[in-house]
Structure formats: C-alpha cells, structure tokens
Length: 463
Image 1 (cartoon, rainbow, N blue to C red):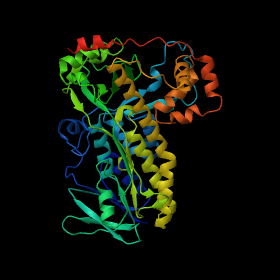
Image 2 (image 1 turned 90 degrees about the vertical axis):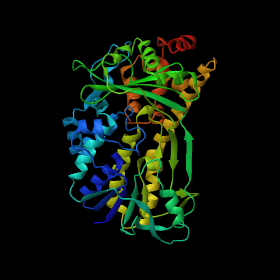
Image 3 (image 1 turned 180 degrees about the vertical axis):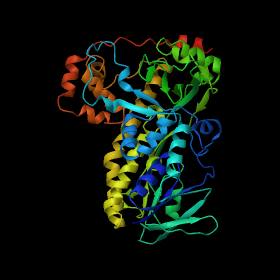
C-alpha cells in the first residue's frame, strides 16, 4: 500500500488518518502542537488548549450527517463519544405547533445526532487515533516546506521538509492544517502557480457562554436551535455531560451590540426571549467568550482548467471553511475525509488521475455546500444590517419564502427542511425536487411572528 502524510492532527486530519490506515496505508500524521489528547474528557475541557483552533472554546454541534459517518466509518469514535457523555439530540423534537401529524416516518433516525463540546470531541478522536494500528502520530513536529519534482508549473509533491533537515517521502501529502494553512506558499516555493483563494470576513461576532445543569436535566428546546431574532440570532446547543451553550451572534458592524461581551448585558438579552430564557437555568461554567474575524474562505488546486500540483490534496478547512453559525464544518470535513479514502482505493497509483478526480469530486460534492452556506450567511448579515439601520430588510426569494412558510404546516416539508439543517441535502437540492415548490405554494400560510424586541427595546436591554 501507499505512504501518506497528513499535515494536521485536528478532527478531520485524524479522521482521514484513521480511515486511510484502516485500508492498510502507511499513514503518518504530523502536528506542530506537541500536546497529545488528554486521558479524559474532563481533562480536555479543563486544561487542553489548541491555539490553532479558533473556536475550540466556542459553541459546537455535530450535525446528524456527521454522526452517521462516524457510526458507519469510525464506530470506535462514536462509542468513545457516547462513553464520554455526549448528548443524543433529535432535530425532530421541535416540530412547529401548527403541524398536528406527529406520527413517525421511516428514516426519522437520520435527524438524530451525537454531540459534545469541542474539546471533548477532539479528545475522543485523539484517543481513538492513538490506538489505530498503522497510524503514526508525530506531535511537536514543525514542517517547513515540501519536497517536489518539477512538472512545468505543476510540481509533483513527493514529501515534506521538517525543521532540522529530515525529508520524509510520501505518495500523497494531505493538507489538514485548516484555514491558516501555509501549503499554498509552500507550493509556490516548489514552482506552482499561485493557488486561487476566495476569502471574505463572514461579518459576524459571536458571544458564547457554557452552562452545566444543577439537577441533571438539560433544557428542552422550545424553538429551533438557531433562531433569528431581528438584528441578532440565538444559538442554543446541548452538549456532553448535562452541559450546553448559548450563543448570541450579531453583525460585526453593530458596534452598539458589542456591549454583549459584558455578562449582565448578555444575560438580559437572552432572558428577554420567552422561547430561550430557560436556557439560562444552569450554572455558568465559562465567561461570555467573544469570537470575531471568522472567514468564509475557499481554495482550489486548479486554475483555468489546469492542475496546479499533484501528489497533494486539500482537506476540510484547508480546502474551504465557513462561519460556524450553521455548524457544518466538521460534518463536511468528515464527508471529505471519507471520499478521500474512497478515491485512494482507486486512483492513488496515478498522481495525475488522482489530482483531477479529487478536484472534480470536491467541486461536485462539497462546493455546493460551501456556496449554500455562504449565500445564507450573506443574506442574514444583510438582514441584520438593514434592521440595525432602521430599514426594512429586502424581501426573500418568493419560492424560498413559500417553502419556509409551508414547513410550518406540513410534516413532510418540515422534514425536507431538516435535511438541510442536518447536513444531508443542500437547500438548492431540496428546492429542485419535482413538485416540491408547487406543494409548498399550496400549503404556505401565515406563520405566527416570533416575539422579537424592537431595536429601541433591544438597546434599552443592553444599555
């Protein structure tokens, strides 16, 4: 079998390493951070730091599509998460009140997930990866560049250079270093043309706080996990061991609402929502933690129909990352890792074929999710900014508006909507289904407005 080097020991790098090692490849994961995964979930939460992971202490949720991949492909990780106290969450638990048909449907289990705080999730992955035969994890290793042989302006990568001079070779180098990856610069140093990159600030600032239950009960959801409330949104996420997070996110341009970094302002705002106030009924275990400067970013190792390099693959956030409001990052990364394993079974002996197939697969199967997420987040940011400036938000697309309204009345259309929320089908894919929009237009009715404080009331709350 082949020698494969994975750069980065985050969740998706370790997932790829385990999947490839299970197939018999000789896999080495190289990680600059010298700290191994702690021995217990509590140690991970209390003491583990991951400076390269911007949202390590922020709200986290594994979508049902990600849970399904774990149970199918990495059952040892799913078992470790269960043993660590991960929460099992059913997205169908919050059915709109106008839907009276609450009978189960075949396939409803696809809306269930297993989720935990990010340090606890990474601890489970780390412990399972360390126990995987054929997977060598080298921590505290600084990679300084690539080794390559020339192919005009599309070099073939043959391995990596380490600080100290070592040059381990590989049949494939997988970049799992995340959005800050230096691989594009290394490729240029090896003779490649510049790597195309789209990048923009997502426009959001997050304020998150974690809670622990005082009586062993986690609050029931009375509203969707992510709820838009005028010029801000609330995100409430169950986690492991009777903990949960509450996140307020705003437009980064809303200077007034940045007072929410102060716990009393933040608490008054959350308490003002009748559907969410009960999520404050626990013991706070963190301060209000802000996060800003989150990028929507995408790279591609091809330009104008030409490959920029062979012998290398961009994976997960190294390929594309989006702001985390819809929680798709790790789920898309796990899907990407599984498809990398699949392609390695058939194309790895031909670097040109592998590079072309990996680019096509990524563009066909993953890029629609990136585009879908960025479009939704841009629309929400425009809506927030309009409300902040005292303007009426622009009207939504009529077809989309009809579909969203109909999901409040029809159990099957609601499940179709949940397919998008669960990371199973893009919104564009759902809306393209034959007859769906016709049915939505027939059923769409008035949706009771969600109680939202006016801008003036909001400012008084945090004043």
